[in-house]
Amino acid sequence: MTAARLTLPSPAKLNLMLHILGRRPDGYHELQTIFQFLDYGDEITFAVRDDGVIHLHTEFQGVPHDSNLIVKAARKLQEQSGCSLGIDIWIEKILPMGGGIGGGSSNAATTLLGLNHLWQLGWDADRLAALGLTLGADVPVFVRGHAAFAEGVGEKLTPVEPEEPWYLVLVPQVSVSTAEIFSDPLLTRNSPPIKVRPVPKGNSRNDCLPVVARRYPDVRNALNLLGKFTEAKLTGTGSCVFGGFPSKAEADKVSALLTETLTGFVAKGSNVSMLHRKLQSLL
Ligand SMILES: C[C@](O)(CO)[C@H](O)COP(=O)(O)OP(=O)(O)OC[C@H]1O[C@@H](n2ccc(N)nc2=O)[C@H](O)[C@@H]1O
Ligand SMILES: Nc1ncnc2c1ncn2[C@@H]1O[C@H](COP(=O)(O)OP(=O)(O)OP(=O)(O)O)[C@@H](O)[C@H]1O
Image 1: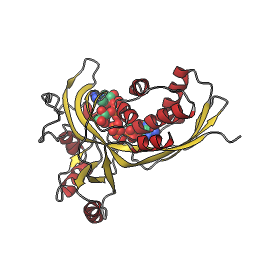
Image 2 (image 1 turned 30 degrees about the vertical axis):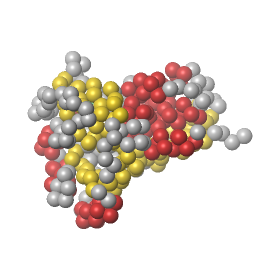
Image 3 (image 1 turned 45 degrees about the horizontal axis):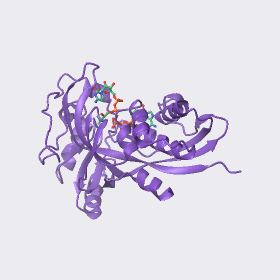
């Protein structure tokens, strides 16, 4: 018998705005942010095995097998569900690591949803999102699969419907450490909470931007170059920088000009994750 096999997308996210409200006693920062997905990401293939072994076949530079968020997600789900099945996993990785577009968190969420399906666990989204939060603050939004206004450390989610433009995303060839940015003494940590919904226009800034731009000349350069064509923004703690355009043709035109010297890609913004669109089509 052929083992059950499934290939699923693992999309990127953007932070359309990011305000830092304060620091909690455990050192983590309270945020307000808007997440939107991109129709662009990795692809993960899963094949069920009956011996309980969890094996990621694709090697990641700098990430040992057992530290990979894909493996951690699979192990936690197996432990907590008491499932006796195992899984073989392969990934086609195109998302840059440490780019602020959530690749690792997305991979973890795709693994949770893929295994829930293949192992026929029947867990609901609340339970999967709660497990996901123990792997990373950005995992719950990828589990739920809808653009969201997020509070807390990113786990309190309210669905939102921002416009879905085409984006040009520039990928400066530096990896930014999230921990380093959140520990910078110059970081703004006292933005007033936004209490009105939907978030009023004029709140699209990212409080991490000044600190990241100061520390990373390559990010500063990308912001300056893209800023000649559209509002250039930072996602998460960077390094990626993005700007929206009304059409693919316009995004492609600017991309052709800038990607002579910089790495980047064009992708459509999406309020429903392509992972969820694919899972829906399987039902
Ligand atoms: C900045 C965002 O990308 C916005 O989407 C995320 O909040 C970052 O989430 P993440 O990549 O899952 O971050 P983690 O790997 O959990 O955090 C790395 C480190 O950044 C700091 N950190 C992270 C998130 C947060 N809200 N406050 C923090 O102070 C903590 O020192 C933490 O140890
Ligand atoms: N499957 C994975 N994909 C990417 N990174 C992983 C994975 N598993 C573990 N990691 C580790 O997590 C770190 C952060 O990866 P990730 O790609 O999520 O960064 P990011 O895009 O900056 O995320 P965020 O927006 O959540 O800050 C990597 O540098 C890597 O060491």
